[in-house]
Length: 200
Image (cartoon, rainbow, N blue to C red; front, side, top):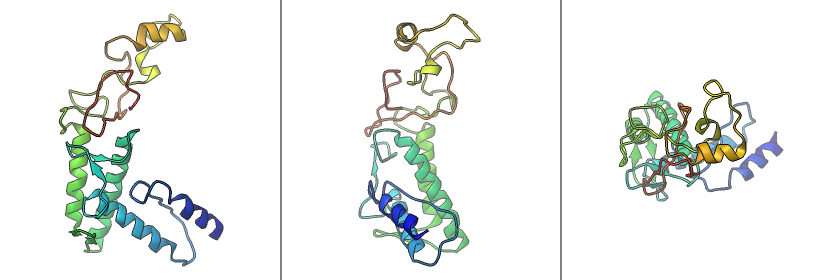
């Protein structure tokens, strides 16, 4: 167990403490490792709440910005972590002392609500970044199966070449709605609803 925990501690250091978070569930001898994980988790939460000396970057519209590829998965994970930690703090009648300020459970929930609202459409594009949610959501996401007609609708075989010529380059909504898929914008809140945009 010690060897594995050492491995995890070393692996967890890649990418910086504000970008990675390791959560484990189990029984471990009292080695002080949980205190280290709690400290790193709290630093991460403070940086997401913009109360650290190394805050997570935000887009002009206020969405947390971690990485160009799949950023919204990190935003969703961060909001989940903040929500759970807010519940923990509430149960202890406590707050989190960050470098820049004290953060209450309500402060964390406010950050969570803002981030979720951004993903769901309260953003400069006035667009939901979740396919199928709301009235204005992505129609042409980069996804092979979603862009080609379903075999239930058209049994004609579609080869690779035809898939590109007839479907991929077609300027129309995807044939199949990929409900629940999450797309990503860039660090300036730009999103182009185009199959050729690989940053989804």
